[in-house]
Length: 118
Image (cartoon, rainbow, N blue to C red; front, side, top):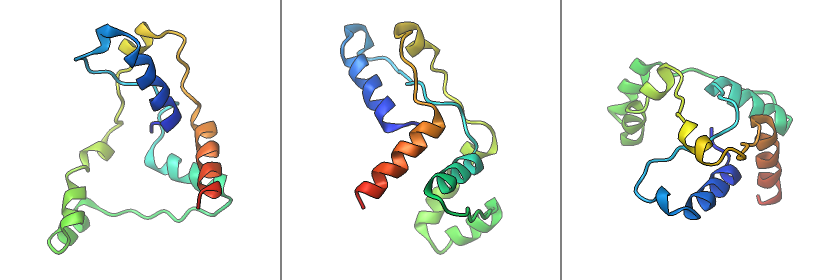
């Protein structure tokens, strides 16, 4: 999961070096989380009890017959079958002082922002 403030900071850093143009860069994030960990963290930070359910690929495929949006979502299932990690080593080599915000802190700030702007 990418924290927007880290992404913005990383993009600004990339704009400051000419050699970044035309290359692929992955900006570092906090520690990797499963979807379940992310949901549990969000609900805990919001002071709510998580309500987590599972939709199987078969059920989503069936629902996709009737819903174009669901049909599009099934194309992303591969991202949830195995860990989906990005190699950020190139960015870290270029910007060794960049430290991503830990996931818990990013979640706290995000929930706080949402509460202030709803």
